[in-house]
Length: 193
Image (tube, rainbow, N blue to C red; front, top):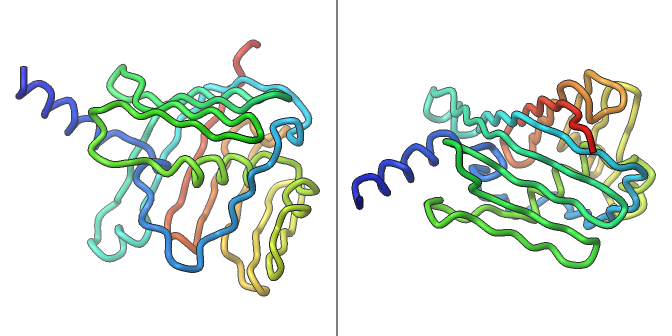
């Protein structure tokens, strides 16, 4: 039984997504947004395949550094809920009501996920630009077009996001987080509410 637990923990570690395998944030961390669920302006239920490439680690070790995770994401005016799955087991849940962020992780995970960064990436990718711009600290700006958005810090691009679908949460979203050294590919399919 103990051997099986170790094997499951190893399998979970090998198949987890970027959101849980992100490198430690550098001192000049990206701003946390903490946007209200109602600022999203719609309701959506998505089935997603998240694929992370840890760019800093991949370059240093000449490895792909690629990890994947299946997730369910639901956003409505009252809350944001996310559940991450690997090897047929729920390994992470996240709940944001606009005031309190709660996250639970399966005990088989050998690391702690950073729910603040997970929520920040979801909001940076999918929330309307006006809501994001309203919360950015001094020195941070957002440039937005139909197919891409870029977050700048004092004129330097820190995060670039490209979108293949309309609305943006359909199709493939690619988040290139240059500040923290990872590329996150989000393949979304709308689920019936």
